[in-house]
Amino acid sequence: MKEFFFYSALFIIFALIFSGLSACTDTANSQRGPVDEVPPASSNAVTTGDVPKKPSDFPPIASAVAQADIKNLDGSTFKVADKMGKVILLNMWATWCGPCRAEMPALVRMQDTHGGQNFEVIGLNTDEETVEEINTFAESMKLNYPLVWADTKLQSSLLKISKFNGIPQSFLIDRDGNLRGVFRGANAADIRKMEELVAKVVAE
Image 1 (cartoon, rainbow, N blue to C red):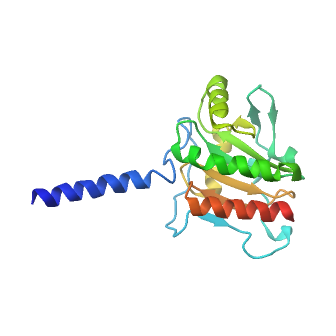
Image 2: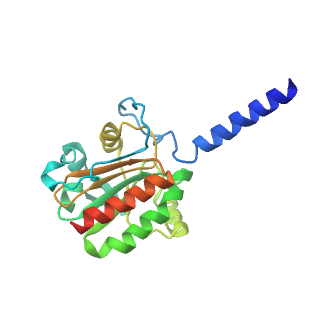
């Protein structure tokens, strides 16, 4: 009987560890916006670019996302709408999130590979971390894309789209401002799908 309880406890511990590898289940400490319930799904990734379609066949990114003020570390602001003509990958992350760290080398690769083709990764910090903390983190991770702050309103708007209350998650927006893919968590297979879809949309 002792052996049974020992192995049961061991199984539960491993299950908990494994479940934490693909995503952090909490978003920002400052997140107060409503979050839609996550429906049961067999995959963490949602891609809308598997079948060739015209860009107009894809939904435009929500106005609440396109028009939100995003704050740079130097205090200046911009909007996603200002980036029209570029392919944008919005990535929600925080320094304390292990899965966020795990996917960052792929984000760096995509920025390296496609940066010269009007592609940009934008790292949306979902916590109230300081400039110093973020810069130190960026240096340690050798990040080559801008890190900015996403306020609670923008975070809430993105969570409504993804229906996933966790990080990392990424949103791919094409040059016409259309939403082309939503990626939840940092599962290795989903990261590969994200890289493939980014390459496809950049090449259009």
